[in-house]
Amino acid sequence: MPNSSPPTLRRMQWLLLLLGRLKIPMIGFVRPRIMEMDDQKVKIRIRLRRRTRNHLGSMYFGALAVGADLAGAIHSVYFTGGKEMSMSFKSMQAEFLKRADGDVFFESKGGVIIREMIEESRDTGERLNRMVEVSARDIKGELVAHFKIEISIKMKSSAQNQQP
Image (cartoon, rainbow, N blue to C red; front, side, top):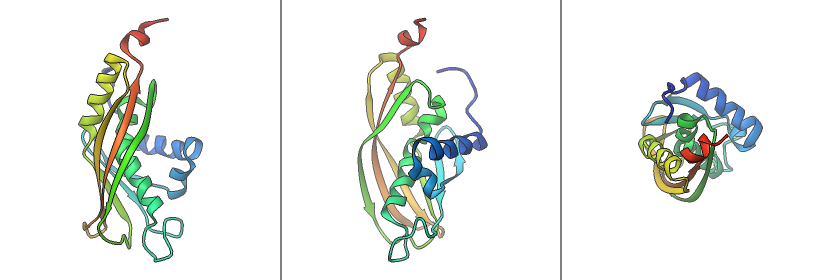
């Protein structure tokens, strides 16, 4: 990996805004906010409002999926800047424990897993798949959902990066 310093929280929030505006409109629609981020964990908030609410007044499944998606995979952008990488989701398991009647905070501690995947894929040039866990908690800190997301990453290999 390059010896550059990781992006700031402000820069990551800017990249998330651009991603939502230019590439994945659903992300822009729910307007997630990165609350904390470092090499190991990330915490993202999605507010309960008209756009994210279902007919029962709780957070809609799609908004919960967007939060889990981002919390599980945003480390790939954090470590690479989103360059020279192909990242997708292979599978998702979700367990909904209670209704999310307010803002929801999505937390993943998968930074180490993502970093290892990026380094190994860069060395081998192969696509790798790993499971990352994401917890979703309400404003009181109670667990409302738990996700297991299989992330698939392929980096350009070191040999490919050195070619002119």
